[in-house]
Amino acid sequence: MVVTRFAPSPNGLLHLGHAFSAIIAHDLAKERGGRFLLRIEDIDGARSRPELADSFRRDLEWLGLEWEEVPAQSTRLESYHRAAEDLLERGLLYRCTCTRKEIAALEPNVGPDGLVYPGTCKGKAFDPSRKPALRLDVDKALQEVGEIVWEDEIAGALAADPRPFGDVVLVRKDEPASYHLAATLDDAADGITLVTRGADLFAASHIHRVLQALLDLPVPTWHHHPLLIDESGEKLAKRKDSPSLADRREAGEDGLLLAEQLRLHRFPSGISLAKP
Ligand code: GLU
Image 1 (tube, rainbow, N blue to C red):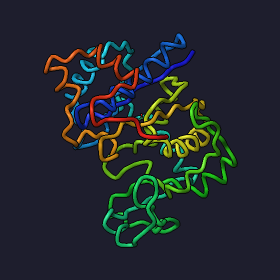
Image 2 (image 1 turned 120 degrees about the vertical axis):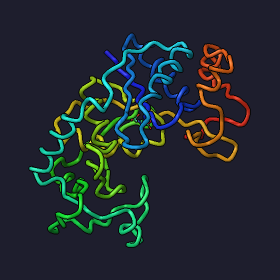
Image 3 (image 1 turned 180 degrees about the vertical axis):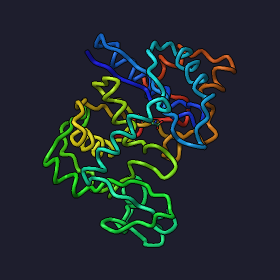
Image 4 (image 1 turned 60 degrees about the vertical axis):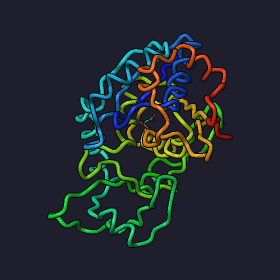
């Protein structure tokens, strides 16, 4: 049975891009007689505002979606910890005490998710007076998993290659897990068979596929949909001043009608679908 999910982070109100994404995940599941899950990804430290989760639920209801909610990430810290310990013991993670500023000063390459860590701490004793993050040793991970593929419903089959990201952080200094580790473990625990999300996270799936192989997790299919963009070609963001779903809902806009328009790709003026 197909199982999809919508996994918002409560660090800002949802906007039209989220509505579009949630509707796609919802409809892909319902059209195929499957289940659609909501998972609140609330381990973003100070940026996380748990009270927003209620607003998210009201937004989904307003759009006419039906979902089952699974436990929020903050209740799953033990599973992240166990997986990180396992990878650490197998020598697949290393401790890194570099600050963002120190990394930037090295003028490293820029990858799909910002600066690519140049591996400064790899193979070195770390300074115990500084709190470390745990990074994946990508070369070692690839040696262990060999050649593996992942399949996107739109893009087709791809060889997993997380190298453009460099040695990504799997456990942050201040948090029990990074997005990559938490989302990969949760998707497996929740029985997600079709990971549906925006194309901005397409490249991250290379990392997630490698983590699945390392941790012996079931392998889903992916569906990365094109993003909604504004007049300047930028993806819609929580930070920009376009009205949130909560604003629209509270102003009395018809959520069911909005959902129908989004399904038909009829977007409000100035908003369009990015070319794949
Ligand atoms: N929590 C992530 C976000 O709000 C989405 C993660 C995912 O869909 O994999 O951007």
